[in-house]
Length: 106
Length: 168
Image 1 (cartoon, rainbow over the protein chains, first blue to last red):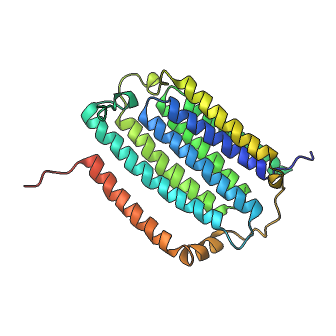
Image 2 (cartoon, chains in turn brown, green):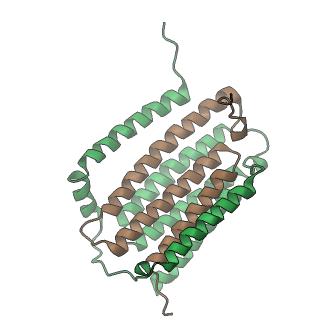
Image 3 (cartoon, chains in turn purple, yellow):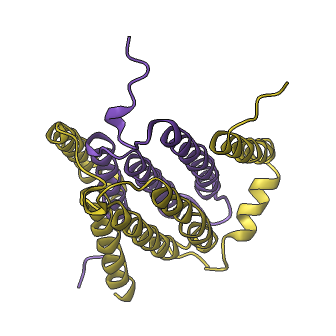
């Protein structure tokens, strides 16, 4: 097989994960599923950072890898606060459907 | 050759599991598919010589984030679990938008000749040393900011989820 896995292959995998996450954010009713879709998108971005660093960078300067670590930290903080909000809202509204979250309507 | 096979097995696994996350009507299944996606991406990190990141991915995403998601799912589950994660009425618009975004990104990737490159060989001595050098020297301020952010997020999450008692 002459085909070798290049940078564009990894980027395509990242694009697929990102698009699936985007679809999940638009289409899902349950707010926890929306948070999961956000995690998918963050993972796709991480994959792109690492792939670019691996193929276009050099071995001793790993800026892409460090950025990916920071994104993982942000994702962990985001999901902690997001899920705490979900549980807090669930306690008062007894629902996790985004259709019921309509306080801010005029 | 071997890495190509491993890449395709785990890339297809990750994308298929991501498909399962967004299409499954059962939110518990979605949560476990999410773990499978994280594992697949971790294997891709190993193939990209990012050994430290693969370990972080497994520990933080599969070990912490996913368990937290599963806990939230279990705490907020009501009614029939088989229909706990339905689509909204306008899911077609979302599918259209996501498909357009994917086509656009794929066109950019496939037409850019600079990115059609194979991997240069790395010595494979591990990336943890170089990452720590960067993190404790040029990225020191963001590193400390991330530490503060994590502390604040932890405190904020506890306050939000537990509620604050009215002080007298």
